[in-house]
Amino acid sequence: MRIFVGCSSKDEIPEKYKKDCEQLLEKLFVNNDLVFGAYDSGLMGIAYHQALKNNKDIVGICPNIYKDDFNNLKCNKEITTKNVSDRIDYLILESDICLFLPGGIGTLNELFLAIESKRSHEFDKPIVIYNSCGFYDELLAFLNKIYQEEFTPSYIQDSYYISSNFNDILNYINS
Image (cartoon, rainbow, N blue to C red):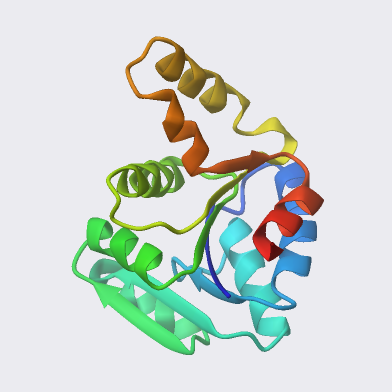
């Protein structure tokens, strides 16, 4: 299975997220291939190195402005897009499942585009949010407000799976 991992590419994030997510990524890429944003640092770098260590297929996708990032990577397939929006479309297209770990604005952009694309019936792939160390607690509370106040139909919650337990995430992905 090809898993897109949306996550932070920053090394400066708190260690607790790196340690927690590394446990998940270590087990995840024993049997699965990686689709990622083609950057070798932060959680993204951990995902890349786990897939590389296990000789898994790696698909790197980045906008043209960052194409030089491929010079330091070993990808089975390299895709360069004209912009960030196209990059996200390819990340979803090339994967069988979308997994979101802690990340910044880019990760949130990818997450919300995936949810909206699924809501609009543009794809029907699983979307999984790993709430590592409670990272997404405030975002999930805000989403609950949106559903409760009927800005978005509550059935949209059924379009993604959330857990703070990496074994639950692994079981969900493998089922």
